Length: 379
Image (tube, rainbow, N blue to C red; front, side):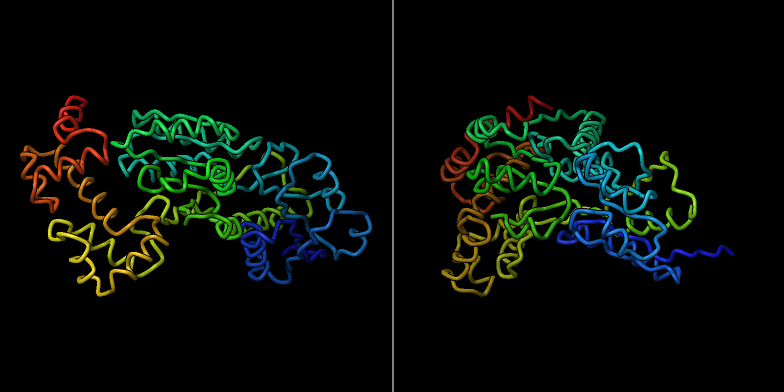
């Protein structure tokens, strides 16, 4: 059995963020399972030789590498044996355990594509290698499915506004941003976008970062990354190779944990239990709901209370939610059945053909007949 004189694995990570805390917890978990190893969290202050003198004997450093070579060099002064866990930029001088960012992109495509959206867009994060790889994975999965992906640059506010203005109301657009921070910047740059989510646009981010989510005007769906496993595996590499440094060529990729679905991609993923109950009734039993009064009775709430909660949580009236669900159901029936338009109107809870046709045109920009002809012509 090896005798290990150094007993600490150091952690350099932004612990003010969820990803940093998860990374640290992964290292700590490994150390607990392998006594007498201990995890040592480095201070967030800039590394220095004075700091090195104060540190306990270390096997190495698990580091979420900063974006500049100079900062990495200063970190290396603390200990030459480092494992990088970041993919902000390409670093070839150290081993890396990090996210499988191609798989993140593929997961994003799978999540949005299953919603049968009309258009898919990628919104990259500037000057970041993870953004390049997530975009590649997103486009690769799209090509394999015969789907085209458009890209809007991180500073192209005019292009995003044109997309909003020219949005085809007959289709819903899927927006995948390379990070939650990118989603925040996008909503700051084009604030009118938030009023179109999720009815016209579905927005998906990456990181599931609570600090950023608290700054957003909407509840954001996000891909959750497995930084706890990354920290655990990085600590294992340092331990396994000690006293030798971990070879630079070792590159371990950890797949994401999955998608945390919220309002920005799922209208029913609302935190308010009353709104969630109402949305489920609307989705599954729209035919029997004649009007808002019918829905209010079934939910068991006052109309005013339900309207206030819908406006607060969905930026939508109760009547607006009913209308949108009727038309979504109608589009499916028009495209996939031979029912007459009057029969489809009845299936969607509207008894009068004239009222149904007017509502359909108001929300989609075309008549039910024109929609059916266009949809069948594309098949």
